[in-house]
Length: 257
Length: 283
Image (cartoon, rainbow over all chains, first blue to last red; front, side, top):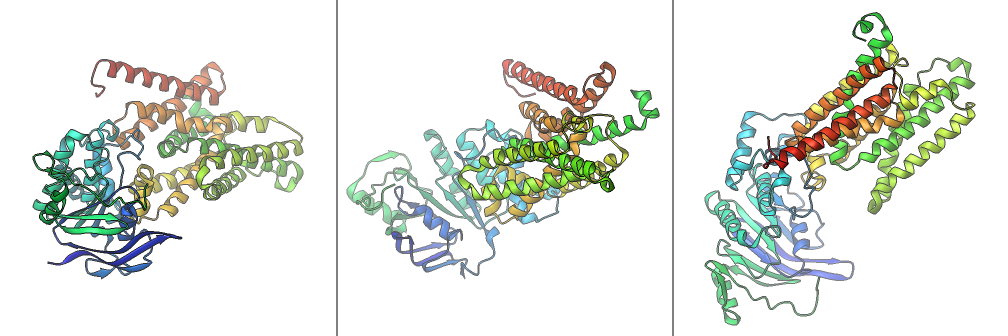
């Protein structure tokens, strides 16, 4: 199976402070990887490196088999940042308009929307279960619904890989389950590789196929079954039917917040 | 006024210029308001004042330059001011709004010096401050028509990019669209439209024409396109309604236009209150 992302011996430091040390992660095509770690564990730095927003210092990152410095196919990668709490909720745009804006780069300058693009927008909204809200203003929706809209915006340009930064932050606790269902559906029925980063170590859905625990070093990287075995040694409480509770023992001193 | 339009060229000029400004100011105003840049319009209008005053001064001191249209100098100052604001926003990254009072006071200061050098206020300057229907010349109309066509074409062709930049600047930059260049084009358009609008509503009231119709529209519109549509509609209602009312009641047109825009805004707020009071809020 082809690896979508290969991270090899990656280290990164901000001036004197080391944030990541010798990280090795492989993300196979079609997998759903959750990287978990406390605040300040280097998750965001790792994401920025993968997205090419920070320059590599040591180590390599291969995207779709290509070195990141030579990689140009950025439309293969969809990125959903921590939007729910940072955008202007009073913005007068419909859900449809917001999702359409995901096609801006793909269409290029001086081009217009055609019927086929509208269909793509509707399809992306259906994929996240938000089609019926397409004519609502984005500000009228709940945090979780807005998050789904932003995922649709990333989906509309048909990426192979979707990267989500703390996607459940704005989602109500009771909706987290169905949110993961939706992500799992994107993963299994649409074959989109998912990379999700979260500090919420308490809840990782069984939709996730692989887990990586990060806190400056990589403490665990493997599939969910292995992970369950490792984590159940210390902790076997279970919150819900298909939500695993993870103990995260890596917060030893070091970096916090 | 209707029959007057057929007879008097100055009424034709005022009416057609008003028609164009009624489209342009709210059209750009939508992008300004949603990007929280409302005060930029105010700052630039004061820089335009400095340009007008400079032009009047030159006209006064150099007889060979008599007949120079102050609109041109106003535009040059306005565009220069807009570029300066961008520069300052880069310098004060953490205090971006600081650029606006700096430019505004700079503009007023410069304007006051030019006015005093030109031996104080005269009726010409007064007409630029508060707008004047009779002051609009045929040349003004042609220049404003040219600006209108350019601005409308740019908005149509860069609509996607302008929308993305307004809604989510970070995402726009990350997705690789030329965000900087598009923002630059946008701010120059704003500067041009401000200089063009001052003939009708006057420098002190220009920014209201960019913000009030949009403020009303945002209350009741659904989606971004509808917000633009309603803003232009309210802008036209204010400008044309204001010109007619001012003509028949012999009032200052600039003030009448703005007060009409305020009235529309109040009505929009009440309309929203009533409809959401009845439950639902949607039409």
